[in-house]
Length: 114
Image (cartoon, rainbow, N blue to C red; front, side, top):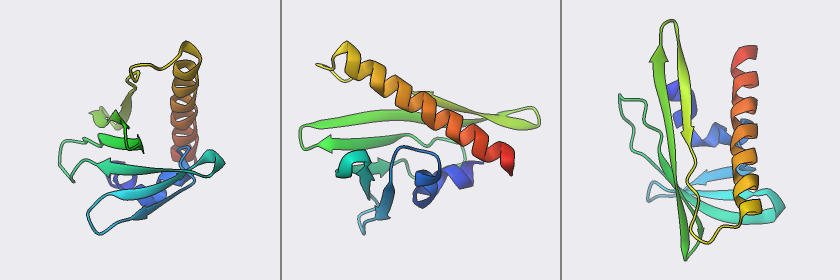
């Protein structure tokens, strides 16, 4: 599962990102709903299941996202940690949490099909 999740080109299959394109510097250009753009900086490949990444929403705001694949008996768990950005309203925070929950539901459904 780590290899699948570490392939950012596949993230549009299960995340809110509509497209991700690699850059020469190891970061990825991302298109988000509504045509917005972000830059994603993923964790380096590792054997620990760490898929943490930073999402540069604007030049002033970068959101740190914790994402891990943890072995659990015959399968694994995907752990997602959302952090509230300073100045974020309650409604914006609720939208962020809802988006994260939707992404996880999409991923679960996708993996259960395979």
